[in-house]
Structure formats: C-alpha cells, structure tokens
Length: 252
Image (cartoon, rainbow, N blue to C red; front, side, top):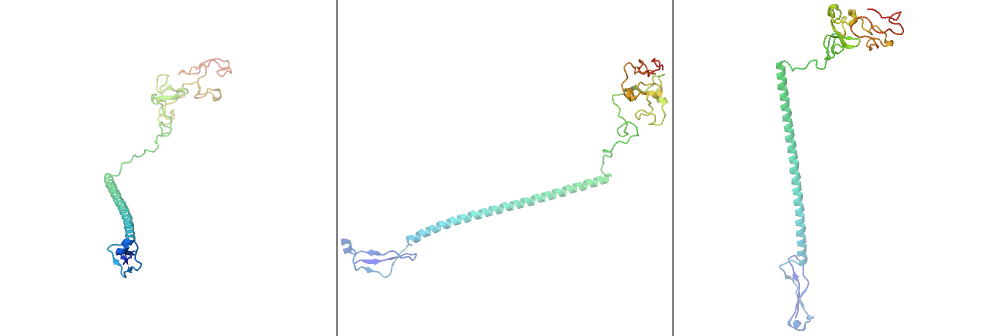
C-alpha cells in the first residue's frame, strides 16, 4: 500500500507531499487509492530552496551595504585627515608669521636704539628745498639769469647777446674799477662789479632806440650799422633824418 508524507525543513517550512509507492504501484504504475498519510513530517537537515535563495540575496545585500559603509567611513576619515592637515598648516603659518613680526620688531627696536645712541639718523637736509641765493644774483635760488657754462665767467649782457667783454675797450681799464662796491647795485644780471657797455661811456647801437622802429634793446642791428665796440653810431643816414637835420653822420 502507498504511503504519503511531507518533509519538515530546518527553516520550519513544510515541503510538498511525497508518496512512497508500493510494489503493485511500481508494476502497474498507479498509486493506491487508499494510501496512508503520515501524521508527522519527516525532518530534513537543510533549509528549503526559497529560504536558501533569500538568504543568499540577503548576504549579497549585506555585503554591498557593508562595502558602501566602508567607503563612506574611508571618505570621512580622509576628509577629517585633510581638514586636520589644513588646520595644522594654518597654525604653523600663523606661528611663523608671528615669529617673523616679532623678529622684525626686535630688529627695528635695536636699530632705533643704535640710532638714538649715535645721535639720531642722518637726514639729507634741504634735499627738496629751493636754493636761497642773493636777490638779483645768479643761480636758480637767486632768481637771476643762468649763464651759459660755455661762456667765460666775466662776460656781460649786451644788446646783441653774450659777446661783449667785461673790460672796457677805452684805455684797457676794467669796468670793475668804475662800479660801486655794493653787491647787486649797478651790475648786469646780478654780477657784482660789471656794468653794461653804455654805463662806461660807449654808445651801443639800439640801446636808445625805439621798439616801434625795430632798433630797441635786444633788436638786431639795422643794415649798414657797425655793431662793434667803437663809440657813436655809424652808418648811412636815415630817410627821416633821424641822424641829423642835414642827413649827415653823427660824430662821436
């Protein structure tokens, strides 16, 4: 007679019904109609297939989760180490800067102490001040005209530029003997002891002329007029008779 039974797995699940066929069932291939059903299931030493499959999936999920947690912990530890390194570097840099400031202040204090003992620092006095010369004298500070360095120092200003000598051509005497001893008085351009040529009795062409006619001071000599050192005015008579009533020459 056939016997029907069920398997009891370790997971607590019950298997589908199993049938142990009898000899007649093997020969005929038909199960007995009055088969016997066992009341208690037969114990198994394994879990059912579904439980084993679910357990495998759970293990995989746990492995993936553990790997993710591990990566997260590693990332957190790296970030913490990086932030700690940045903080440490900032502290060291601040410490170095503080020490450098203290060292610089100490050097400045020592230098100030040395300068104080030596009588103070040397300062270039008057470096940005204007020169204070005699009023009317030469030089930038005095406000007078600046001489051409290529000319001799005893030259004076004439009607035609820097070409008249300081010595008088009359008798060879120097004009210095004819000037007052007071500096700045009767001097040309502020040069003590030098008078213009007209002051020593020499009539220079153009010194007494009219600016409107073009023969004033600083104007070029008219055509035919000798601008040399000879006394008087030499040259042809003007059309207006300025050199005389009869148009003749004016004697010295």
